[in-house]
Length: 459
Ligand SMILES: Cc1cc2nc3c(=O)[nH]c(=O)nc-3n(C[C@H](O)[C@H](O)[C@H](O)COP(=O)(O)OP(=O)(O)OC[C@H]3O[C@@H](n4cnc5c(N)ncnc54)[C@H](O)[C@@H]3O)c2cc1C
Image 1 (tube, rainbow, N blue to C red):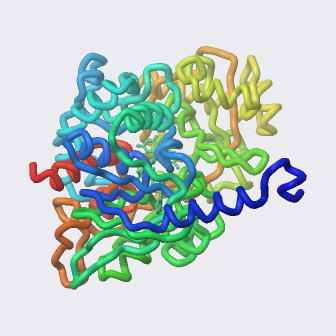
Image 2 (spheres, rainbow, N blue to C red):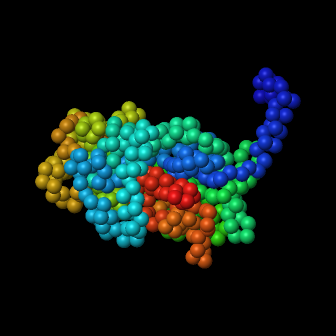
Image 3 (cartoon, rainbow, N blue to C red):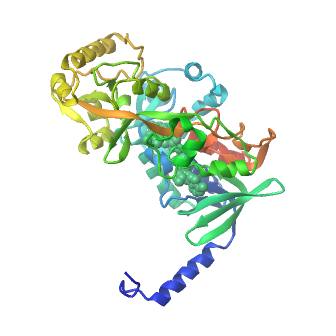
């Protein structure tokens, strides 16, 4: 359809376009430019603006939130008031020791620092209205009504953003990190009108991970090329190449987290991790459990799953889990679950041997009663399948989070190849290799995001 047919004045339309281009191409200056309006970027930008800085936040997508929007279930935090009140007690030191046992490469001091600040981060989020107050275990806190964690965080933070002085520029992609004599001076960005430079005293990269980028997965983590991604459309990882161009270091790029609970329907990949967190068990197409189905290393768990016969396994829950989670209720409404009043009936719908499924659930009920699970599961034994109806959903592994990234030092400054760090270039969140291997992503966004702002503010 031409412009006239659409009732538009062609001349006026042309001049409008030119005007936008000229405006968009002017260089601008600010105190700090933040790249990426996910959880980490918004946290940094808000803290800086609240403390008087002139902040520009650029986001290549037309909405804020990134992969943070998709964070499904729990905020990793230990020894918070919520857990203390519920008797879910573990000390920070014990949790750090436990985590280091599963992942010996983890930086225990940084994990301790993160956890010691978790209560403050939760208090800050809850003061914005997130309601992350329901302990799921001694290291997990969820929203009170079981609605999606990330959606609650992004909703609350984006209304704070709207009320702040942060200059948010959507549909604006950072395409180069600017340097002069080795010092970082800002970023070059591109929007619909063209390119321009944002010159700043400090630059914060909060550009997220790469698992939705076909090329990036092939380049950095080829072992997993071809798996579906549950992450956001913007998690395509071009920033990593830009950092390398200025002599920044990337590390652990091949380390990714798989999501063992991806349900694919009509081309949409959804994370059903809430079903596991609310106490679900995993059975194969024989109706049998085959591993510790709450094993904390999701990539190992995913490997166990793909060793089973067939393309998928099932997560099984009962009505108690369903009642506890709005997110699961949403998936039920979308028709993702098979549902039945008895296990025998459910087995028939699943196409698994009914006697196996019944025996599996009976053995698990005993494990919940005694605490002695044959596969060594000790976490999230929160349902005992005594409350029908029962539900089953098919899942298989997908790519969820990249765990390596831009190497940062203890102050979250980007490290150079010569072992020193850039004075005024920071990286935080999923794009950074902060030594924690994404063991607490949304907590890292909030806690380390605040830490980066504190560094910039000289606090
Ligand atoms: C399905 C799923 C479930 C998850 N569940 C949990 C959970 O239960 N608990 C938990 O803690 N974590 C969970 N995570 C992980 C967590 O959501 C993310 O790792 C984390 O929130 C990433 O935050 P971020 O701010 O670093 O990146 P993002 O939120 O991804 O934000 C980065 C932003 O940068 C933008 N960007 C990228 N490049 C550029 C550029 N060049 N210029 C401008 N903008 C750019 C992107 O578009 C994006 O909006 C889950 C993740 C997924 C995908």
